[in-house]
Image (cartoon, rainbow, N blue to C red; front, side, top):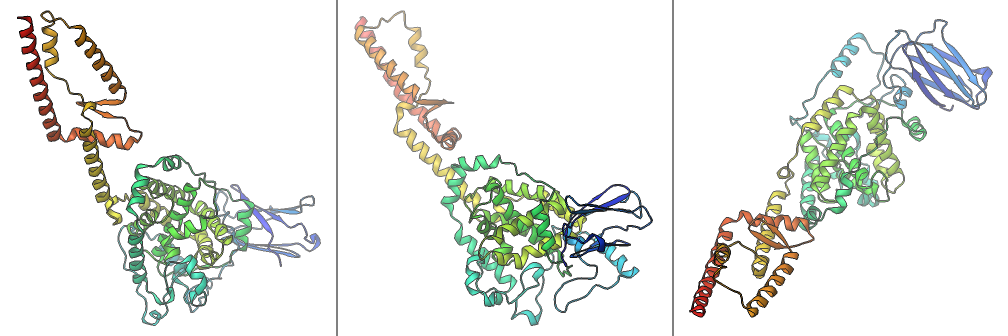
Length: 521
């Protein structure tokens, strides 16, 4: 049997299901409606949907077939007029047969839910997580010490035992089947510390022309699914999940989406051949099979990896990526699903990154369609409110920047001292000279010298930038000029320079007055 392509629309009273079945045998078509279940059968097509609300068969239902495009249009009334059926775009969830589930061994089948079960599910949906409080990390059982877990919801193990060649290209962790969760985190942070390059970071900090262009980029987020998206959702496995640690699952999603947002902004929405590497490398979940227990821990890891590995290692750029993540989570399950489908396509096209789809992305695509909306909203608020500082990432960024600025200031002072002619300081002797102009007449030779001096002074002025009390040489590096202005803050050094020049100029002026007086006599 083939699962046909379909689309669902709704209004206050009816659900409209459009089924594309161009090769159907019209005479053998059957439609079944009961509760929230809708079934369509017309050889070779079969479609079964579990709707989020009940529909009824009371004589108002209609079915039409358009032979030109080969599609059925079935209109069915809602049991409760005005009820909004949520998640009609979540195709995989609609195709999931009620009772079909997957989980850790042993597998558990979801039978008909009793009233008590429904109340328990309702209480579970209303459960709120405190994303800022570190939860007790998952403690591996004694039997699993020889077989560590990883993958979506830590439900897989032993995968890399038979994939030794592929593991080198996609996972930084060596021997993941023999490494516990705590060891993974410790080794990851050690590798990040060794990889961090101070010179690379400072270059992106002060020479950030390329980064500035990317900061103005606005990602285009569309909520509607394309035909390719819908086809992918139809091919996803139809199952539910029993998850022991939901917080780690949600935080793993944050980690993956953060890496995805970095790639989208750095490529301005056009994935390239490096996109699979970028996404997998920046995600601790994908590259180190790591898990998280708090929002702070998750974002700290995201920031660290964005400053250690990719092309642009700029703090302001990483903060922008953080804002992009908040925007995507604000879009809810639909926007998150579109991003996960995009990641799935990206990994599917590169070898051996497709293995990450089997380990994580495919299951996330299925699970997000039934994720709790309230918990997603709560997580979004936690991500939005958390403001990570440079000191928090543990790479000594404030110390590196302060030492660099001090070195630049010292260098600027040294350069200024070498060319005294470019420093101008006003003196009181200029006023004294103007007061005695009636007693003194300039000779031709002195006039010529004065003109030359004036001309030289004008030339020097053209090559300088005036700032309070100082004139410094022009520089094409704006950050350098900005830091040179910090010389004004060093009052002690400036005062000593002023005193020295005042003393010299006063001495020269006194000798000139004595010489002129003797000539007049």
